Length: 111
Ligand SMILES: [Mg+2]
Image 1: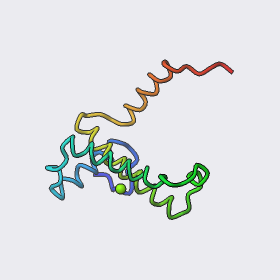
Image 2: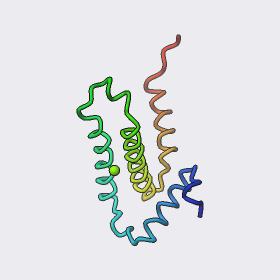
Image 3: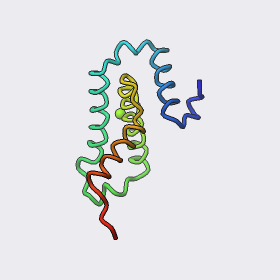
Image 4: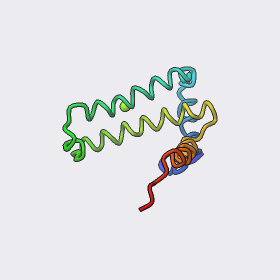
């Protein structure tokens, strides 16, 4: 098992999250429905951070806001990784594949 402070790959994050859940007997709660709902809630927590900021204010977060955003990004990544793992999906590979599809659908204009 990779030390949690040295996780750099999706496969390592996925394994660490599985171990974390198993050690707490939380896997019983991690149905696809529950993980999708948790993911949505964590995304909403990011939205809430920006809800009443002006566009300019949203571009310059203070250190406390930046830390809060980092924590919520972590929460989103955790639930996304756990949901994807249930279907043996690698989020990085999913994103790469979708970017290939998007680049064909929206070709860059030559400069
Ligand atoms: Mg959160």
